[in-house]
Length: 295
Image (cartoon, rainbow, N blue to C red; front, side, top):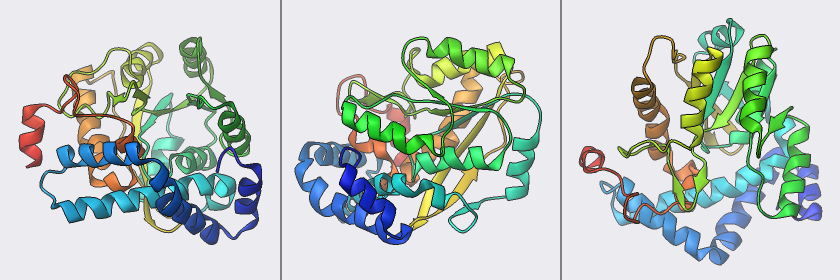
């Protein structure tokens, strides 16, 4: 969908609900059949993370995942139409708005759950804080160009590649009440290093870098995510900010694991990274304590 200009234009012309459904249908009935390796990885990972579920229940989760992937891609063409109260319900809106209206820099941390691009657009829409997003462009240049074009209308400034850390630190320290948007579950070499699933935190991952940036800039963490409820409708979940000034890195990671890590498992039918990692590999399997807790 991202690399097909005609299809992208068609999705823009369709009503948002119909475009979302159409993208989900294409993903579940067409893309899934051609991406058997990703489907198999997601199945194996889900069996490890949710051993408590019967096989039929896990298969239903996988089917819903493919619908969500397609819906999310299709909704890229219409994000500007979804950034409103009719499509996004904020849990404890008053408390959330008070955090956004407060002082000091914020690092908004989330995972690839529901529609993460809509979440980025929503936080920009909700606050006058100067925002910056960290991204990693797709390898396919056509997809990268289409994604950049789609995001320009709603995401604002974004940064990636070499030198990004310096640009991010400058943003957080030199702009009043700056906000940084980070997806903590980046995929590298068929793995994600967050959620940790009881494993040691990888020092080069997005979360480790964010922890170091927060201490240098005096920024607090705002953990949040956007879960799909039905069609192009969502709930924004958040928890009170985590302050590196009063918490250790270990305490912050544990709190993020409890909130975002649990959200990835609870909403496994909406978590993109489930098919982009391989938890069966040596050294990457969740810890014994974690697995015993899930049983």
